[in-house]
Amino acid sequence: MYAPARDDELTSLTNYADQQLAALRASAYGLTDHQARETPCRSALSVGGILKHVTRGMRGAVAELTGRAETLVLDEAAYAEYLGSFTLTDSETAAEIVEQFDAARAAFLEAMRGSDPDADAMAQPAPWAGVYDSRPMKTRYYLAHQVEEYARHAGHADIIREQIDGMSVPALEMSLAGAPANDFFTPYAAKPGTLLA
Image 1 (cartoon, one colour):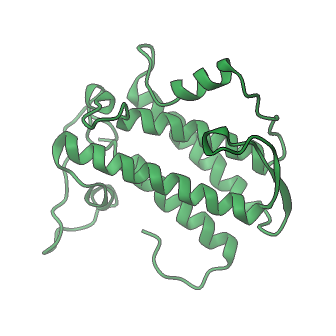
Image 2 (cartoon, one colour; image 1 turned 90 degrees about the horizontal axis):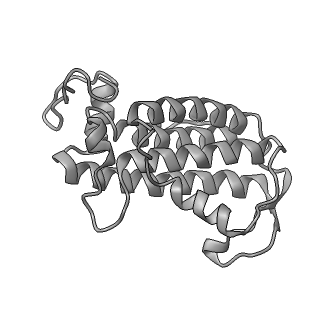
């Protein structure tokens, strides 16, 4: 948890983004590969698929924040690649996705820390939101959007995890952090051989 602090704007945005990423990662704690692929809700979302999609998003954000992003191409192949980012293929394992997530998270947080919230930038088109052209923005808009995006997906992952085995992500996060039991919390013990165990 990002505890109350008197941090500057960039540190606050980075810490809030990392808080959401920690929640996303914790959603996989103790799951088997099969469970990480389960889609227990009415959507096609799984914990593994969300981690894969967020990994893709963090890689794109690093490219944006470091000036290496290519202009978004709006074609069928790009759309198919985007949709595919929500699902683990038969050749991918959930453990590999968590490793990729961890590497992308470190690079993303470094790129966030190195950015200037007040810098001028151009937003890529977002056809899923009805925006078909690039638009000017401040980097702070983009950084705040990253927090919002990862918070949304952390909520998805929390709901999916609760549907799988009743565990809530905050309890999983506290368990991973080694928090002791108290009146409100009993640590979760993952079975050996499961994710992050």
